Length: 67
Image (cartoon, rainbow, N blue to C red; front, side, top):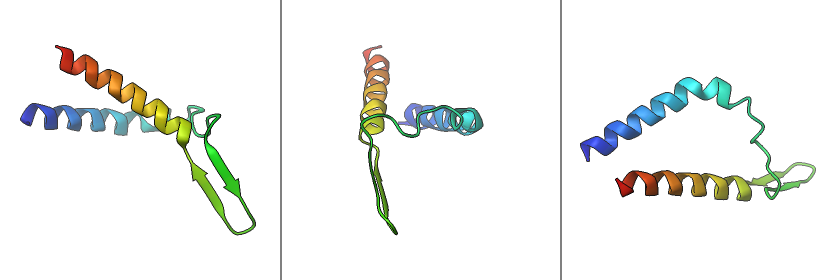
C-alpha cells in the first residue's frame, strides 16, 4: 500500500509540474465528445476523452501489474 501511495504521489507531482505544457495540447474537444449549446445552457460530455484516458490507464496498470 505504501508503494502505491508513493507512486501515485509522484505521478500527481509530475502532472502538476507539467500542467502548463499539458494544457496547451489540443485534447480539449475530441471528435465524439458530446456538446450541447443553448442560449443559457452548455452541456459537455467528454465521451471520447474518457474512453481514451481509460484505455491509457488500463494499459499502464496492466503493464505495471505484469511485473
